[in-house]
Image (tube, rainbow, N blue to C red; front, side, top):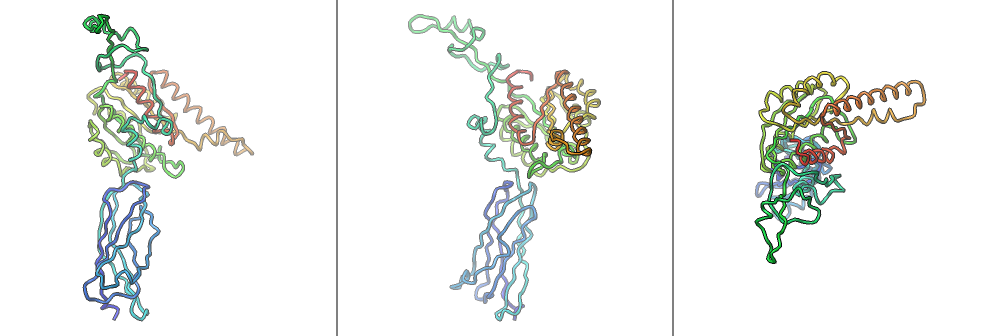
Length: 399
C-alpha cells in the first residue's frame, strides 16, 4: 500500500552566509532505510525562502539514483539570493508515486536551515583593501594630489626632484653628510591624520525609498556607506553608524579592519520604508552622543523644507564637528524638467519640476556659502563620489 511506502530522510548542505545576487550551489542528501523498496516516481521540492530565486523545482528524481541497493543520493541545485537579511529553510517536500502509478503520497521532511544574506561586497572590498589604486577608471576613484602637507609626521628621507624647499629639515640636513663630504638635503614626509572619528547617519525613511533601476536608492546608499567604512578603517579612522526614519539603530565607534564584520552584521538586514524621517532630529541626537571632533556624513534626500530647521542646528555642528550633507538626486524630476512639453498638463509638470530642482540647488548653494560640505550625486555614482570627497577632506587636514 502507498501509506506503507518507505519515506526518506533529507538533510541540506548550504553556507550560513550568502552574498546578495551571487549564485551558489546547495545540496539535498536523500537517505532511505536499508532494505525498503523505493518508489517508482519521486518528485522533490525544497521549501526555499521567498527572498531567493530557484528554477530547479519541482525536480523529478531518477529511480536509477538508488540502484544497486544504494541507500543515499545527492541532488544539487542553484540558488540566487535576491534580498538582504536572515533566511530560513523550513524543510523539503516529496511526492512518492505508487507502484501502479495510481496514487501519490505527499510527505514533508523537516530539515531546517538558518542563515543570513549579506551585500555582495567581496569585489569592491578587495579593491578598497588596496585603496582602490588598481581600479581607478572602473570605480571612478580619482588619485588626488596633495596640496601642502598633512597633519602627522611620517618619516625623514632624502630630497627628491619635485620636493619643495619648505619640506627640508635643516637640522637633520646639517647632521647628514655623504661619502664624498657633500651635504644631502633631508626632507620631512607627512601623512594624513589618523585615529579620527567618522560617523555615518543614514536615512531609512521615505526619502530614499525610491526605485532607481533594479534597486532602491537606499540599497545604493547602504553599499556606498559600507565601502567608505572599509576605506576609513583602512586609513586608521574609527567608524560609527546611526540610522533614522523607519529603522533606528546606533553602532558605536570601532577601529581597525577587524571592525568591518561588526558593521556588516549590524547593517546587513537594514531596509527602507515609507516612514517619515527628520534629518534635524537625527543630527540633534547625534550631537548629544558625540564627545570628540567627528566627521559626520549625513546621507538623505534634502529638500527646500529642510533649509530652516537644518540651518538652525548647523551652527552648533560647525563649532565642534565637520559635516558633509549627501543628497541623492531624483532622476524622475530631472527627466520631467528636461523634456519638451507637448500639452498644457506636461508644461505645468515641467515647470513644477524645474522650480523644485532650482529650489534644491539654491538650498545647497546657501549651505556651501556657509562653509558646509555638500554632495549631490546619483545613486549609481554615489560610492566613488563619496570616497573622493572623503579622501579630499583627509588630505586637506580640515579634520
